[in-house]
Image (cartoon, rainbow, N blue to C red; front, side, top):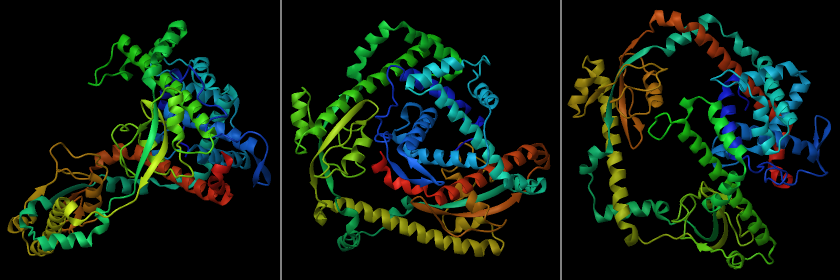
Length: 554
């Protein structure tokens, strides 16, 4: 959950960009979805013998939102943050739990430690200076957070680092000899060959008869069933339509232009590159920053309008899907009807609205409306029009696709059979003194010699076979020199691996790199020990049960 302080130095520079982009209006407020309803009285049981009130959850929710914004910028509540495992409700409870453990272990961060953290993390990498007040103004205050809230966040980051040192002390027990052995293993060099069995080489051998294809269809009915589909009507508010008013406001606020220039100067010129990878001129970079700020604020304003519309829509009784079109007409808007789509599908016209689609497939007659949902360019509100039940089409309707699938499956089976037979024969051939290359030639396939690589190699040279390096490393280093693997399914085909030789790590390299490797391994083990402890203790605390109550708490 919590990275080390130095590990995250860069994201504080990223967030300064986000701070400029959203500096027109506040993003975080008690009305945000993640905190809605957490003001006022009420309790959620006890934690550590004390009442867990809405006020406490609200305060830690603010800290969770601040953490999300500092880490992910303007996309803290977007799909990218969710894909990376960030959930503001989970984060809120983890911060509450962390706070309790810091108190239990008597860990506090002094004002001097906070000042040192700020110096380390807000230092301009180019000039070495720290514009703390500028950061507070642009990022903290502009988002309606207080300087005290930011300093609380810093104190917990420092506290988490100290707690990690205490809990993860077992990770420091790795001895230099243990590290040397592991470092040698990580840098052993494998000389290996592979024989690849691709289904494309066996397509010509597939015998297709009408009876066999129809039987294949009968055995695979579930694969040809058309899933339930959804049709929605939706209203769209484009961010681009609000750009003129944002431009007009910038024209009245010359300090905004100064902010764009200041942002450029705070980062190295090398940070700003065009699509071709070339360093942008100062004028072009500042224009790009300005463009991002304008687009971001325009989308914010479109979202505000969509929210007002949605609130009016939700207030209409009874709640009927057709209310969307009626209200849209009242406001001079157009309600569009989508083409049918299944879960995971994207209909024409909604190519940029994946989050809306995910919400729309879950609509029901009792809950017919989505919340205002952002895409990269617009904000949507949708209503359920109808559900189209799942159906199984007749064979004649899907016969062409069934034939394609039949050929693919049968050629894959043929490749697998050939690979398994070759693996068995190659083991015997190599044991009798033949080379792996000769065994492959006899089987009318080709042995491919791989470039030397180690368990720590991160990429094979250009021109190497297109294989997953991690998969290859796991298979090769599980073999003994001179051994042939079993047939290994891979993607839609498979391969057989031969390990010719393992070359020991160069001792000069071991001597030069051991100290840094030892430090890295100790840190990694320390982090793993802390994360395992934190997850276990958090589960024991009972706070995880609150996550199931988020609808009641939000």
